[in-house]
Length: 130
Image (cartoon, rainbow, N blue to C red; front, side, top):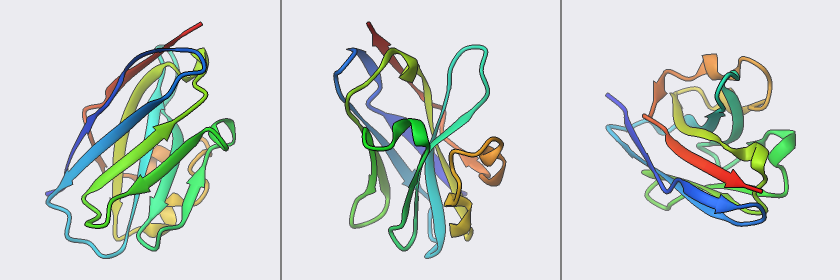
């Protein structure tokens, strides 16, 4: 059973940076997609960034150039480096996994991409003030 735990959220002023982490356990798949989603109050869950088992990354258009997804060498921790944060980045951020499905990373910013992922963390809040 895959277990995901996010950390690193907090409050920051516009233009600032935060680094989110997701510790994954029970993960034995050699082929996968792992991703970050976010959900603001009253809005749907939105794909932000994804990384496949071969290291290929995908980003939603509204975070390209500002956010960077990465994973450590042991591939049991996922990170999201968020720079140049904007108030519209305020949301609860979730880590998600699609074991055995690396193609789930493609088009991560498309509406409904969350449906490809079967494992979710509890989320961590990010608040960006103007």
